[in-house]
Amino acid sequence: MASLHVRDIDPKLIAKLKVRAAENGRSAAAEHREILKRALEDVRDLSFEELAARVRASTANRKQTPAEVLVREGREEN
Image (cartoon, rainbow, N blue to C red; front, side, top):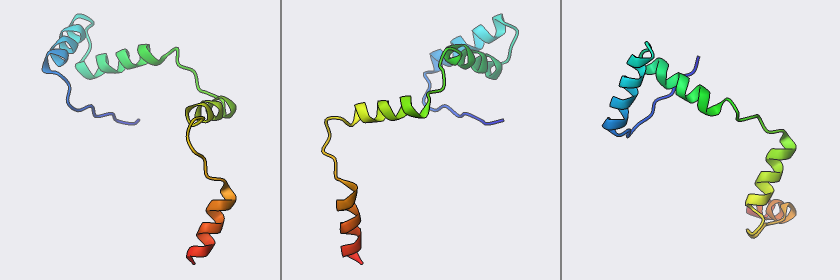
């Protein structure tokens, strides 16, 4: 099982987490896991095509260097 360490959390938020955990009969760590699970249960894994489309959309307005130019530059460096 993986671990997650979260830094720089407001002490008031930690106190609220501990109160909520106690109300639900769980440890703070178990409550944290439950909160993350519920927050992410509706998130679905993207297919490669969907992920690629998002990357293309996010870089659409950026200057692109064609692969052949990069290869040529790499060969010239050697």
